[in-house]
Structures are given as C-alpha cells and as structure tokens.
Amino acid sequence: MGFLRKPRHADGSLALAAGADGVHAAVVVRRPGALAQVKAAAWFDAAASAEAFERIGKQMRAGQYRSSCLLAPGEYQMLSLDAPAVPADELKTAVRWMLKDMLDYAVDDATIDVLGVPLDRAGGQRNSMFAVAARNSVIEARQTLFTTARLGLAAIDVPEMAQRNIAALLEEPGRGLAMLSFGASGCLLTVTFEGQLYLARRLEVTLADLLQAASELSDELASAAVSAASADIEAGAAGEQRHPVFDKLTLLLQRSLDHFERQFHTIALSRLVLAPSAVKGLADYLGRNLYTAVHALDLHEVFDLARVPLLLDLAEQQRFFLALGAALRQEAVLPAAGMGQQINLINPRFQPRTTLFCTLAMARALTLLLLGCMLLALVGQYNGIVLERIAVAGAARLASEQARLDQVNVDYAPRQRSKTLAAELSGQEAKSALLRDAARAIERDELGNKAGYADVFKALARQTMEGVWLTAIRIDGADGGIGLQGRALEAARVPAYLQQLGHEPLLQGRRFAGLRIGPAKSLGEGGVSFVEFTLDSSTEAIADSALAGEVHR
Image 1: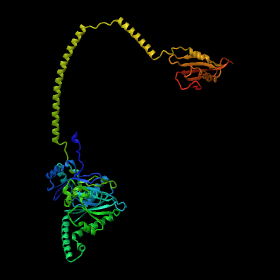
Image 2: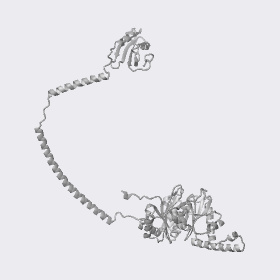
Image 3: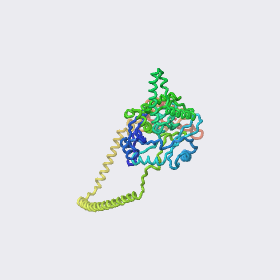
Image 4: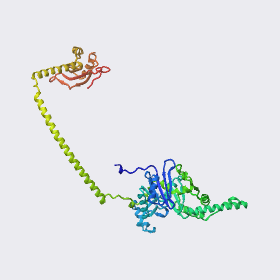
C-alpha cells in the first residue's frame, strides 16, 4: 500500500519569503561538523499567487524538501509576555485571553503560537515568553496558496526566528550575541544565547534610510577630506562626521542593549553582528559609538555558497538573508518552560480536508460494489457449469476404469498361497535367525571365558587363612567377574584375607566393586560367633593392584 506512505524528503529545507519585491526562495542543507550548504537560491519577480508558487515549486523541486514560508513584518505581531502559571495544554488558551486587549482585532480571529524564553540563571527574572499572533485571514490565505499550488507546507515562520537561526551559528561559548538585519520596513534586532531567542525588537530605521544616509555621509566625508587637504587639517579630524539617521539607529541600539542588560544581567554579549547589506561605513560608525564590539557579517562565515555564485554580492546576501535563515529551521523544545523554541503558525482549521463519505463518493462506491458483486456472480455461475461438466466426465471415466479392473480380476485370478511352503519358509527363517545370533555372539566375544575356571579355583585354594572360609563362589562367564561369599570368626580378618588374595597373579588387576560385612552371628546358644561377608569384583584394569590395600565398603 505504497500510496499510504509518507513521502520521503531529501536532506535540506526549502524556505519561501514573499515580499513586495517578489519571492525569495532558498534551499539549505545542514551538515554536521561543516558549514551549512546553500544548494539553491532564486528570486522570482512575481506576486504571491498559486500560479507563481506552483512554478517556484517545480523550479526549486519543492517535493524533495520540507517547505516553510515567512510572514512579512506587517502580517503578524510578536509580543513579550510573562508566562502564565498554567499547565502546558492550557497555555495557548491562557495566552489568547491575555492578548484580547493587545490586538487591534478580535482575538478569536487570530492564530497564535508561543515561544519560550529561558529563565535568568541568577533567578531574578520571571519566566517569560513571546506570543506571535496573525490574523486568520492571513494564515488561511497562505495555507490555501500552498495547497492550490500543490506544495507541502511544514511551517509558517516569522523573521525573528529566521534571524535567530543564523545568529546561533555565530555565538561564542558562554556569551550572548546581538544581531541587526535590515529591511524595507525597518531594522530587526535580536539577542540570542545558547541558540535561544531572548530579545526581538523592531527599530524604525529602514534600509532605504540607511542607504541614503550612507551616501550623504560618504559625500560629506569626501568633501571634508578635500577641505581638510586644502586647509592642511588632519584627515582624522575631517573623518569624524555624523548623520542623524546613523545617530538615531545608534541611540535605539544602545537603549535596546541596555534594556537587555538590565533584564538578563548574567548574560554578557560578545558583539553586535550586522547582517549583510550595501550600507557602507555603518559598522565603523556603530563601533565608534557603542560600547559593544561591532562586526559586519559576510554569509561565507556561516554558509557554503559555492553552488550559488549569486550570493557573492552583499546586496544579494541582504535580500536572501531571512530566506536562508528560515531554511535553517530545526524543531526544538525548551524543557524548563515546556514551550517550543520554534514558531509555527499553521492553523489545523485551514488544512485541506478530504471528505470521504460525501453522497457522490458513497454512490460511486456503491455502484462499484454492485458491479463487483454481479461480476463475481457471473464468474461463479460459469465456474459452476464448468466444474459440473468436469465432474460428469470424471464419473464416466471412473466407471469405465472400474469395469476394466473387474475384468482383469476375472481373467487373472490370484493363486492360493501354499501352506507347506509357508511353514518351510518360516522354519528356514528361524534357523537363519539362530545362526545370525550365534555369529554375532562370536564376533562380540559373548561366549565368556573359553579357557575354563580351574586356575581361579586353584588360586583361591592356595590362599587360606585361619578363621576365614568361603561359602559360595560366583564367576561371570562373559566378563570374568568374581563374586565371593564367606564367613570369618572376626570382621578384622576379612581385609587381611583380601590382601592375601591380591598376591595371586591371576587375581591382580581386578577391582572389587563392593565389600559387605554383616553383623556378628552365633551357632546356637553359647556357640561360635562369626560374621558373613560378600565380595564383588569387575575386570576393570587399574594402574596398580586394587587388592594391595584398597577395600571398598
């Protein structure tokens, strides 16, 4: 049943970021121990439509990857809240109640997800979280767009999380990291620590403002340098130019970083990383005016861009920055808060549903069932007729063969068995059996001692002892075993008698398996007392004579 299996995805994730200037798509593969590889990146000059997304999916081979999309800044709200003290399964309900006065639309019309923020290790910070809310109409439109374009959608993400994914790759052990990215709707500042988002703030300074300011500041610096050269003024003094846009951004950054330091004073920031952009001189400007070190990022530091030459340009890196970050998405859970460290605004209410039991489907199924039953009935009827014909033919053939067998029995009647031959055969078989038994006994040497037993009796006769006499002697013909029964006036004389027997060469090498000495008896009142003994031996050879001192009781 292969059609029920889940489709397999290749390594990597596809992220789509739709904006006013078109759709940016990127495929990124995470590689353990190496830079994440950008397999593909493309910009599509098209509005977010089903036709455009279907074309994008084919070109980017979306069916091979887990796909996600980013909401634009104006399509959602991200709010920082104190986490309610409720069970995890009631968290979103509690957050929805907290957001009812914070949204500019009815909270029932919102799709909500939450993001846990770790506790301050010093214990001074309350358990907090981020709540992300978007209108149901926005989420439904985005999910319908992917469904219509026949693209699988695994997650609806937000830019803050995409930026967090890249910042996590730049962190130094035990230090936090601030990152600033630039866009048409403003700058995005995030602070991360150990791969988790602690601060996210929008700064009302657009990329266009910064580019204009950089251009004006460059012109002013060039003019000041010419003036300084003509007036013989030091070039360094001429270079200390300022601009209101840069100053505004510097002030907003300083306030945000001070706020973070007050909230999470145990986390020390290593630096402020500026996302790639074409804004010249901003890193130096901020470095001179902030207490935090400033570093301008080139995506070569965190990505392998060899397969996408387009991203060699910093301006292109800025355009694809969030799409690349979204493609780095990995699911994670914050154990302490019981909340995820990823945002996913997919609403199950807007997922495509397959109606299995509609009237039309049931009618079609019933029609197919009836047709199947009719076909089975016809096949069964045909098979029955065929089997009946086969049975009739088989019966006729059986009757014919039986008649032939009866005629053969009449023509070739069996002869009667001769009783005389049977008796003679039985006698010969009995004789043959006796001969086989005799041959087998000869081969196995089962006839016993063929030399006789006179030597044994002579040996026993030579060995006499006062107060000991034999009453019975048993000699086994098969193995030559000897059994002795006798009487002795005293029990102590029996072992001495056995040692004396051991001097006979014929009896050496025999091992006595058992010696039994009975209680003392007497012959009538006042008669002589005696004991009875029994001795059994075997033909088992031993290294030295068992009769020379070894007695078994």
